Image 1 (cartoon, rainbow, N blue to C red):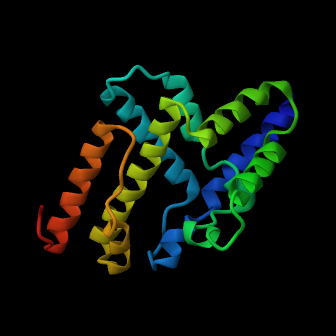
Image 2: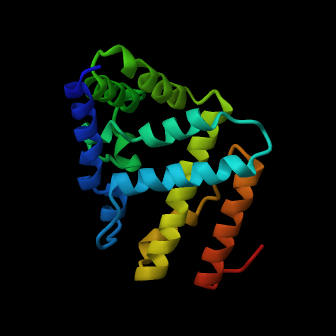
Length: 190
């Protein structure tokens, strides 16, 4: 891999610092986080969760997947979940795969990066499941923080349907987050 290949990949990663998380914008959150901030939140959550999960996990793979999980958004931008339901099934993965291939190019050393990204998309390994859990934990944590900071009641939709996580240890963290949200909103506790 050449310096030019690395620089191209770095520039795409850097674009994530300027790509707003669209779901927060749609819900009226002022100055919402960007995709790079979310990526840090996912990687940080994954790093902490690895220590909590009793099942042995490959930390390098977990962190690689966490860091790469939204890299395609350097080209596609952050298209929020509600928008994808209007598109053909599977198109999100196809579009993001194409973006990843363009970002990474064809240099042999980047094949490992694509392999990590594909492992996450396949969601068949414990490591991929942990990254998906970390992604959701970061989103729910951010929703709670934004509601606390801004009083934005449009964020309550995040809590209307309880989420189920792959790992019981992560489920316990989510359940606690949910209790905090219910206390903040004066909702009855189960």
